[in-house]
Length: 373
Image (cartoon, rainbow, N blue to C red):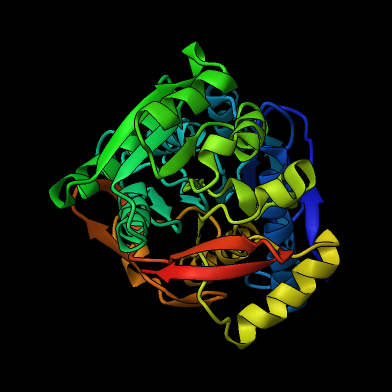
């Protein structure tokens, strides 16, 4: 058997032809981060192929039914409705936090299991739900580790180029500020909606900032800001950081070249992969024709977990409130188990490994591990 992927299907309930269907939510077109979506989908497709090569689910092949969310919460919610109507056994994926939140709300309302691969916003659902689980570490966990990295590197006067209209960026800034404040660290927000790249540089100089954090979208306005700061002689010693992980993808290096090196970001991989991780990394590199990002491993692990659950509980949504609690699956980045965590309404893997890394200025294709948590 091989992996089966369906990009489109007619609306309404469709005959499964004996297949076990998993609905995949991924951003494949703009304004979604399509590069992240491509890696996420590659990981899911690889895992589906391996599940089918091993005999599928109770002898039935797995079919991945893909829907492009394009970073649109309304489109994601509609996709969940459609996929539920098509009889999917579970939902998987999504990268953007606000989009995943909309998908999780509909999955909860419809009683469809949803394993979120990548989105990190703590409040993925308004209320606790038995239907939703998440692999990615919560934003409060990862971004506190990033704040610890800043402190260890000696940064106390920090500026954030931010789009405060996004709940994700606003929440991230708050996490950093709360973590830094007890150590005499400050975070000054620079609202990019009211700023030019020149005024961003002027503010950094005026505030004597030692670090600038990019809490904005890529490529716009992140790329112009980086270029402007790198070329301003007044800011030769400033560190640029991107906790959300924009430099993880090759599009960052392609856009910025040497200017994109030495920009620390969060990455959810262990320092060394185990045998399963190494094997998946080799296959993903071949599939993507480039080094796989941590998002590709998240996609692979998502399908691996769901396949194990479907073998245990059956492919007909025979979920119980405790189904996630019984998971114990070896993933590419360690053994995956879910539990309930205070202030997080979904079942959570506590925690995926977290690194702060950057691209080596001497060799931008190589990533350096700067901090682990």
